[in-house]
Length: 77
View 1 (cartoon, rainbow, N blue to C red):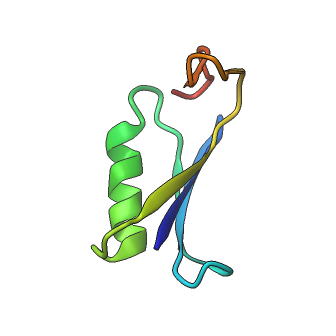
View 2: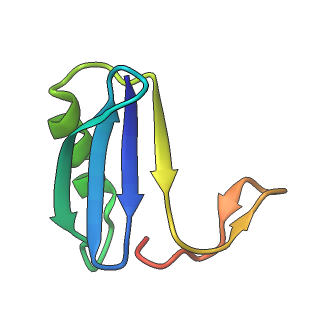
């Protein structure tokens, strides 16, 4: 199962890919003003129903430094 996360300026989405093709169990929350990590973890746990995740795919706005493998001051994080 793959966990899916979309971090936006006003909303967060989390869901799962159980069969590799279909997004399911989507959870939506407003983007918190500070530290979205606890909310994202809770959302993924809700979406997976506690089942283990093999990988996580993120959609995050903002610039990405490929050489360092990190985001450069992404909005919303």
